[in-house]
Length: 275
Image 1 (spheres, rainbow, N blue to C red):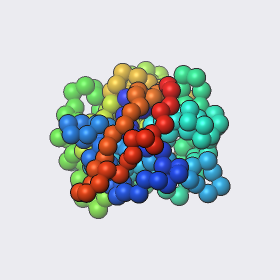
Image 2 (image 1 turned 180 degrees about the vertical axis):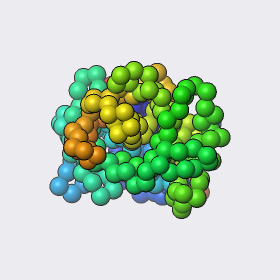
Image 3 (image 1 turned 90 degrees about the vertical axis):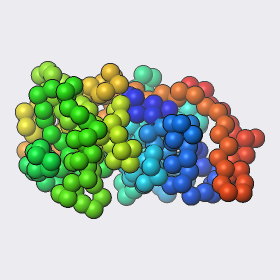
Image 4 (image 1 turned 180 degrees about the horizontal axis):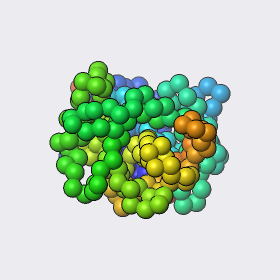
């Protein structure tokens, strides 16, 4: 699936027939040369007092916690697969999220963001450190097309200011009254991705604080698509944060994931869904 350019492998384990080390599986199937290839792995499992539980693993096998674009993709999948209706409720980490599956997009109500540190200096770059369900460093630059996202992003991601877990790194440029251009270096992928949902929220919230931008804010991501972030604001407290953008099934099929001695996923158990 793709959420505005963020791509994911979605595995339906609502029956719990799949019993593997998810971290190891993520590294194998997300490899773009030796697996299917994706930014991350999304697992659906039964949830308590909600439609399902979402587990998200980065391409390097690390547990990613929450993923905004992944959450929008998994909401669309759950609707298509008959697991939920158009307004699923699902848990990820310690929070229950609500989504709205529309024809051309998916809206996801995000966890209220928290600015953890203001005016952080990392790798000679100042910005803010904000938690939007995942940790993000946001800095504003004059032209996002000129920044070396890989080298600068990696240096900031590993900076001692964010030890021990590191963070995602976002470079934003104001391109209109309520428009931003965003490039993101994602931890766990350890590269620039074409979109980042929690990063888009972090970018919009930061711009709202810096420039008093009103809701909604359009965030143009590297894929060329845009996501929209809307919110309610009272002083510097943000609530009812909604992330909206595309979320589509690209293809479905069978991947025989093997451990040392056996094939885990029986191809006969696969049920394909339509787009």
